[in-house]
Image (cartoon, rainbow, N blue to C red; front, side, top):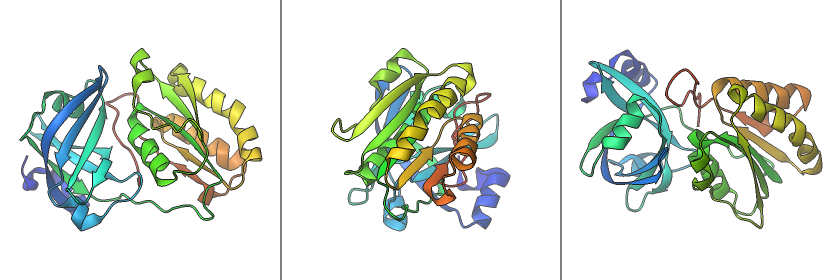
Length: 254
């Protein structure tokens, strides 16, 4: 899809100083039947913008003559080689169909606008992360950004194969608590409400990061801020997808 074919969303992003790039596919890997990694050259993105944890871009796809944008977190961005990967939690949607079918040499338009990350100060004494397959690349980027920091991850799973997803755990510092998705996220909310208070109380300068479906994220963010009383600078909450549609980012910032 050409740069002029991004519709009103593209116009708005331009007004907010969105920068456009074209990525080229160099390869792909089927991690599980529901999860695919696609490798790219960056079209100058990393040299122009640098790299930060949870960094994400908007990809553009065309369906029925209309543009659609979906946001994905960069995986292993390498400014030296101008390469990175994107990981797709596969569903029945336009981005997933593209990821299944793409091959080396294919290109996709992208816009960089809205991403950002401010490292918490003081540095976290413990990371308390709540996510799922859609936010796994961002979770892994936080592990990479704070390599010596203890962490607990509540990880919501949908498929049996989610146990094989590439969570970058350091067994000496990281704890993984898998939670099967039930009740449209209700099981995850209940589990976190049960287990999080003790970890917050036992941690020095805890930092809570939440990125699940929009409704679950809102429920947990309200709980952490209002009932546990954590200050806003120690909590980051991002709704990554809506259950009624393909898992797509719905973030205000990465």
